[in-house]
Image: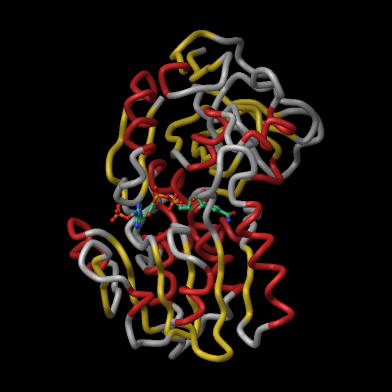
Length: 321
Ligand SMILES: NC(=O)c1ccc[n+]([C@@H]2O[C@H](COP(=O)([O-])OP(=O)(O)OC[C@H]3O[C@@H](n4cnc5c(N)ncnc54)[C@H](OP(=O)(O)O)[C@@H]3O)[C@@H](O)[C@H]2O)c1
């Protein structure tokens, strides 16, 4: 089968569309024929092996798992031993620990949810990492009716879900993005949109109950200034240095928490079948519409990775094996 493989860390140039063996599902796993896969920042980090700290998990000298890709949607074609909950022919979606950018992937049933008929494979593939991050970020912020929420990075993969879900929860939403995405973020339901090329929201006079940060481009002190006295700051960005990445900033955030009245939280997403079902139901009911900037054939994944690396994709980028 074809897959997106890499033997060394580096830029998208290290990635190849090549033949590999079709995986065999182990106990508790199913083999899924991948119909769509979505890109995430995590794919860029595992491709580059940066921050270098990640290499402790992904392989010190070279990648331990040579196939990229986490978010997938597809059809079950084979059952491993002890699988009772799914049948051959079921349409599913979920997050794998790599190996997703391929024609087939073996994946634990615990990491999957059924795809409703009304949801396309492309839409379903966008949900696991970015949709779960948005949902869990809003939960961490206890966002509900009347909460004023600022989303920094509102036009990206996580941000486009966060804006829509926050509106569905009844919040008053302010999205921050660049000029070209102002109309997009407004169309997702944001009550106010700040164009970061014209205005620095950290210098404004408005205060927010919850600030969800997907960019990491302002000091924590500046972000705290625009929070209400008991406001909640949620850090969900991998921005940082080449060795430790966001760790120093996240440690500083956590370390400050006992000394201030505002609540400073670090978001670490774990996609669960329950959240996947919730997100898919929202899409099926028309309450959530994944924003897909572009769909590429699997063979053109290098171009898709380059677009994602520019950090200005509108919503999600999808691959079709
Ligand atoms: N905590 C977790 O578990 C978790 C899970 C998923 C993702 N993440 C992290 O969350 C971050 C966002 O992920 P994503 O998938 O949404 O990324 P993305 O699709 O690339 O979106 C990036 C967003 O950042 C904005 N942006 C880029 N450069 C900017 C700048 N100089 N100033 C202000 N805004 C800027 C973009 O706006 P414009 O395009 O309008 O410029 C866009 O809205 C990443 O760092 C990722 O690693 C964390």
